[in-house]
Image (cartoon, rainbow, N blue to C red; front, side, top):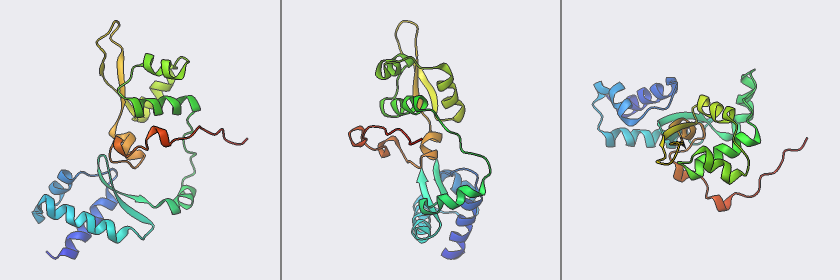
Length: 179
């Protein structure tokens, strides 16, 4: 099998996958090719370079490797889909941000930071989206749940890890959208 054929197979597998694929998953799929982890990573990085100047790009996210559209073509891609993207309230985004940067946190921690109570519906919506989950329970009276973000959150935001989040100091005040 030539290098080009291997890359074509890998490219097709990743383009047809509905979710990111980890290196070990790719090795199982490509088992007949008997690729070492290093060989597979080399092919992935070469494909990443090849696709970097096209409408799609190959990205490594928390769950593995996936093709994504380049940011420059996003406005055109969004026209393909008739459904409106889900809009999250400012409160939901504040709760998500607190969880992302301060995890693991309890509902009480979030309320203390925000200065207002947190709606159960907000936490439920973020859990339903697959962006947050209960990581455990704090050893305190009432054993409150500790919330943290998920790999789905990282994947949806195109991040490999929480270290890819910008530092809190670099984020300015939130601007209200113009009406």
